[in-house]
Length: 175
Image 1: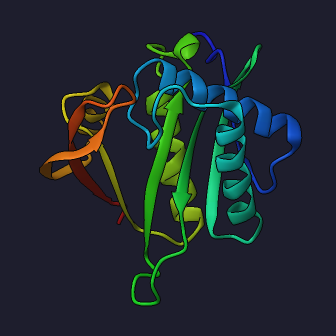
Image 2: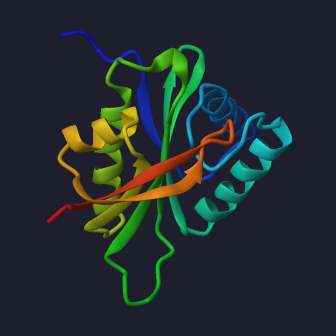
């Protein structure tokens, strides 16, 4: 068995170099047609602003951030939104599971998801929720990993090109 061509680590602070790598991954995903809250074309300034906001949340413990790195830099990421209402201290939302197109189809998405679940437990969270474009690779991955499909909302969001897409909601109980 060969070692994975990437390494995973949690960031507790985001450096300028890491912000650059995260922005490159986000822009690549949007250019590749992924519906991840942004429209095409996604400017570098908009991507950097998004990651600066994430970095601020990470610094104060409102988010947990994982990155995957290969020989070319950051190639994937996933976040847990930890800032929940006071009656939901056991829950987190898994968001922005992104894999650069150069690193796809090698198990990185599954590795990021499994690491995010472990990170959630480390953060004291036992219930995770997420949403994915219905019929997309993410939906298939989450189903394969045992996430429970809750339902579909039609026309929930827009794809980067402006077309509507339906969204499937999932949860995972870690206990």
